[in-house]
Length: 310
Image: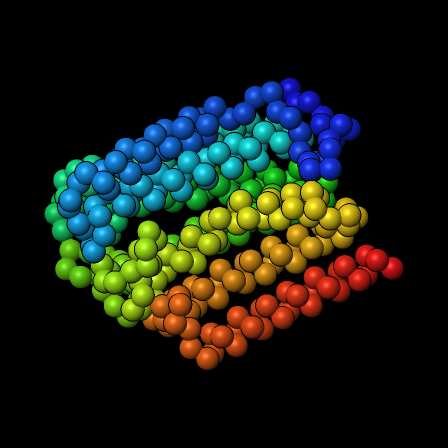
């Protein structure tokens, strides 16, 4: 893959480590476009299909998953494109991710058309077979993501802030993926082998759009936040480059602080959910943990900036 070095001509709004790629991973781009199209179809379904499943419009799940896969695939394609060297192993991992993602999205749509749930559903042999296929697909996607993360860890990315953002983003996203397996250990109703919620049944009152439980814990929150480290940390690196005059080493350290705090936040949100607490109704112990994380992060960031100013 031919890559044009943009670090020599990059303006103040660009990360010097990022390069203008001639070729992106086609498989991931196809997945991003196909997922975006599915999001449009599912959005129309929300508007025209009156059916409700687990307390929300039946097309809401494919809509959310389609949007998530579109963003995920595009971000991975971007990350692979800007790495200093092309990795055939990582490129093939991208092809694998496209394949298993298509399997998962297809099963979700099939079950919506049939008017039933896709995740954890073993109520019939056919539903159990589809859920087994989804579980296998998720595991393969996880392993393919690991290969891409290892590739990013092994390559030397010139700008240290961008390097930390990409590597920590991939690793925290892995944490978010891994935490999703906790859902399979939750006691479900008859015909189900897992649940999103803790302390209350799935399908109860939920927050707008996300559907996160407002009466009990919800393991999807930590999973969601963890996955989006892929976007949040590169955006942090970009913002520091674009809107600050800090040196490269200071920006790198700040991204490291931000990435570390982000990982702890993912664990904190999961811990809160496991104690059956709604996101917006934390108890005193949760609030102390949040305040402690905020104070530690702010203190570390201030210390990094002061040290860099000397």
